[in-house]
Image: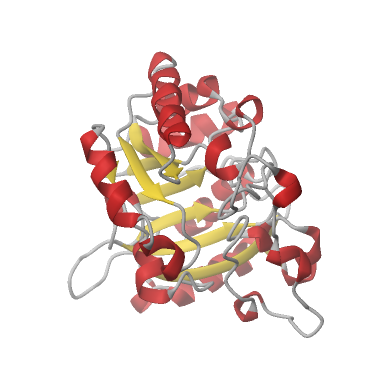
Length: 305
């Protein structure tokens, strides 16, 4: 497989963590997955878990106030129950926790996390999915990093057949990245490129629609690969349900017909279970799929899980 990027320059990657765990949300719940969480995001989502997500003056933001003097490893951070639960992937307070490695070094790290060092388990032939998340992996400067990682795996004859990109759906895909996905995944039998798009709602995340909802961007993703899902976080208010309906229609009009999954707000197990049953019932009554956050139930949303 020919590289689009390599050999001309030495590429370095900035990321917050890598880990191996079961997928916790959406259509691939329970699937063994290898994760790479990139640093930086264009949104903050400080409204999650707040009493009034639409009123920033009332926000409580633990990621801004906790004492990090003696924290030198991302896995030592606490779970943030208010605001973005992965704020350590974009807040400048946590820049000292960034991992900065060459592509080769990063793929060495990722490979070491895989059982037997391979995406296909030799005993069961079950396939691990590669998941790029963030932060926001679709930032323009991060897209080449995903190509670089996959390219390096291909050089080692260990390229994943299933790749998921978890994105907020606001950043345009470059022509180079679109070409790579279509050439190496969309048009290849036995391979899948899966978009897990989580548009952020004003009523739950406190992000204005003008910044957080980009139907034309998501429509282009669907042109590049027709496999994916739309995943909304709601808090049970009528305002949040109305946004899901309106935005789903806008995405459909833009050419994205991915199935819709809905889940409740909850950065901790205690917060999630308070409204989970009610939101699940309402979701299926309104014609949506419901997904829990299984990693929160099992691991308490701990970093690295």
